[in-house]
Amino acid sequence: MAQFSRGGPQPREFRAGLLRRSALGRSAVRMHAARWALSLLTAALMVLASLVATPAASALMLGTAHAAATGTAYVTNFSSDSVTPIDLATNTAGAPIPVDRGPSGVAITPDGATAYVTNQFSNSVTPIDVATNTAGTPIPAGNGPWGIAITPNGAAAYVTNFDDGTVTPIDVATNTAGIPIPVDGRPLGIAITPNGATAYVTDIDDGTVTPITVSTNTAGTPIPVVDGGPWGIAVTPDGATVYVANRFSGSVTPIDVATNTAGTAIPVVNGPCGLAITPNGATVYVTNQLGGSVTPIDVATNTAGPAIPVGTGPTAVAFTPDGATAYVTNHGSSLVTPITIATSAPGSPISTGAGPVAIAIAPSPVNTDLAAIGGS
Image (cartoon, rainbow, N blue to C red; front, side, top):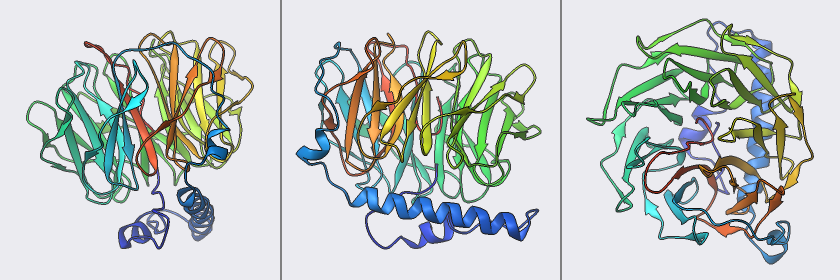
């Protein structure tokens, strides 16, 4: 995922990161087109970040009751350098947890013990002890870390570094970073197959997805998706299909994992950004950042259903392990909206810190469903 505005002039790292593209191996036409598109995105997000949660904004979310869940959701607050824990049994936000600058992605270890948060402006990853909600010592990463995913065995975390075109593996046992893995262009989202064999990384510059063999930490041949800014990514529970949100072309592309070939793009609403898949593998939920909604996609038919209205600038979505409820971060209104899956009804929004971006859920007592903006 690319950088978000803090509601004013952009930090030096922002200007030098998102709006500066490498010219290596790319034509001037592609550079100009990508800069133009990303400039439009930045302008839109500056408007979103200037918005505040008001009764009028909250009215966009219907106050429909939803089933209580257990566990805790962790939400990265990009504009306030913190992470908000949300008690899913009561849908109440706890005290924000301070982290480094520009917290972006979040993922939780399979045992539910630790949340890892990427800090885009500090080039670091912060581990959070879920039992105490305290942040540990930040782990150095590459330049502009954004997306993060953890292997199913909990041994390693993989972090996309937007500004240097690499992915950093982190040894979870020691919290030490390994040798960066070169990938294409500007990596954003990342997801790992359920068998732990392959990590898939989106490249917003080149319209591709790069597979990484986890056992060797080597990148394979990039898979052409669509020249429309591939962003969020998720893998079905059976490991058969990868779904990619194409930010600039308003679509979602399925990829056949067996052949690493892209299928026909599925049209959705404006600005698809994050996505997650229900634990039963039946439905993909896609956040439409410019449309203020979430679109469900039927996995069996790859057809999109009616959009569900949420808040301003929906960015990421995560499911409770029982698949009963989805939680959506709304970057522009600093709210998280719960959605009852059975009825597609949004519930009362939950206040967070400023500019929520990613979300991951740590269930109780163990066994996690990971669904952050850049990975699952």
